[in-house]
Image (cartoon, rainbow, N blue to C red; front, side, top):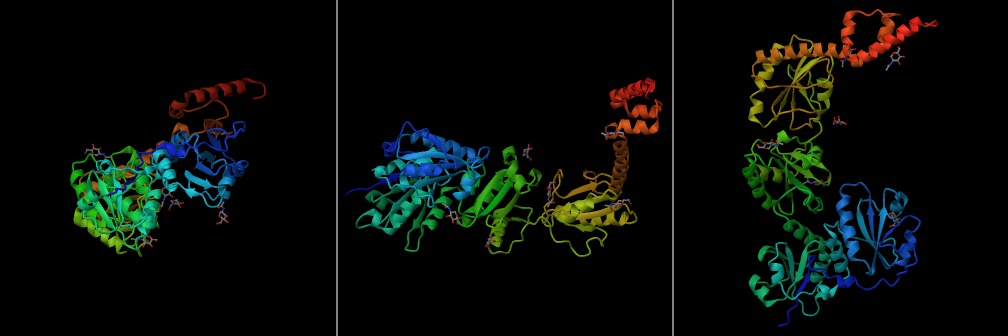
Length: 545
Ligand SMILES: *[C@@H]1O[C@H](CO)[C@@H](O)[C@H](O)[C@H]1NC(C)=O
Ligand SMILES: *[C@@H]1O[C@H](CO)[C@@H](O)[C@H](O)[C@H]1NC(C)=O
Ligand SMILES: *[C@@H]1O[C@H](CO)[C@@H](O)[C@H](O)[C@H]1NC(C)=O
Ligand SMILES: *[C@@H]1O[C@H](CO)[C@@H](O)[C@H](O)[C@H]1NC(C)=O
Ligand SMILES: *[C@@H]1O[C@H](CO)[C@@H](O)[C@H](O)[C@H]1NC(C)=O
Ligand SMILES: *[C@@H]1O[C@H](CO)[C@@H](O)[C@H](O)[C@H]1NC(C)=O
């Protein structure tokens, strides 16, 4: 039996495909550098000249683009002397050209064929230089990928996608296999193989057209090809099962996560070094399997400083971990899992509720409740928090609570009591805010529930109360902080750094006559003061003064 095994392996890339000499090489032209630097002025000329022009549109200083630049440079080195001519366009400088070519996304790699400016093929965001080379090879339908032995890929750590098609004539005539090859072009980082090997057929009991995902000889998942299967469906299947059920967000996985066709992401923010990590991670993993193809499960270590930007984006503070967010990447709406416990059941229910459109989105601010300032405890929301809290005339004591947390609930009676005890105080406001439904846009330390005082006179100061939870102590704390704020405020007003010595002295006296207390206040600005005195004396002594 004739065995046909076709393995398109990113690692087993054969350079000889590209070794054909560049027919149009013209050493005298100044454009004959290894990689052309294209501008508005020479783009069309290059397009006319080269049958295959691979252009990297890059933006210097763009962080994410760096890896792609490295990959492109690596590929460029490998492709020297091939039929593919390489070029770069600095989109930051060549804005007009980028606009004319409809290049919008940053760091795009496009292949222009036969001078056609309008229909370039876009290279999938490459993981490495091998991705670019494999993509070029696959889209050209190279036969150099024929490999006669599947055992090699079966043993591989990496995923291999194996297609089995019942074809009578040539593989390319079968629509399913044709689609399979097209999927391979779009996924240059994945190994693809086609088999008609009897052993494989027997081993996996193949009777119909099927795509198998193999990793270390283990069958991960099988996808039955039907006439309804589209290339896109196949790609979704492969890219989803290529990843673990739950993936850690890291520099290496970020591209894969963001490029995933699954546009609902469940994000677990958790401290990897914490004692609870193992249990929570396992629950998250456990819930993930049932939502494959629908929700991508990603976890983020909040103890990793490099994840700071991601956490900032989702407005997650490390002390809030562990928590789960769902994000709809189509409309960028996020949803917060309203629970204290993170087990398989709560995560599963949350995901199901979300998919059914029943989850409540997390908002920057809830709408202002009617009569929010009429109750003894004022009901704040995102949009009123800063306005009320940072009022210079009122000291505001705010309870930040989570509506589903028993610890939070336990504090509600205390807060009512506090409001009652302080109701005669015009300069004090007792309030609370649901920290799960509103984005808290200020720096608050510690976990929720949090008791935070916003002292009057200070625009942006928040003091967290950590004492005993008794009204008497809360009032004592409030009075102490109010007195402190007043004192500090006085200090600020008279702080030497805020004083225009020239102006003050000028108004106080026309010649040197300064009281001792003022002198003490000017301690820090001694030099300036002496200088002033000296000048005054000079001007005093001089005929014009
Ligand atoms: C860019 O997009 C516009 C509008 O869709 C189209 O008219 C134009 O031909 C495009 N140009 C290129 C180079 O693709
Ligand atoms: C994570 O947990 C470890 C161990 O409990 C702790 O030392 C560390 O400060 C925590 N990191 C964050 C960001 O909370
Ligand atoms: C995600 O957002 C899109 C666009 O608003 C919407 O059509 C889709 O139903 C949303 N998905 C879920 C699961 O809510
Ligand atoms: C604070 O009090 C001053 C003086 O009475 C007043 O002018 C100011 O508008 C008040 N500020 C706020 C935010 O109420
Ligand atoms: C959050 O704070 C930042 C920085 O202070 C500010 O630019 C932004 O407008 C605030 N957003 C909301 C919703 O208050
Ligand atoms: C300080 O006051 C003097 C006199 O009124 C004025 O000329 C000078 O510009 C002021 N300097 C600053 C930094 O405000």
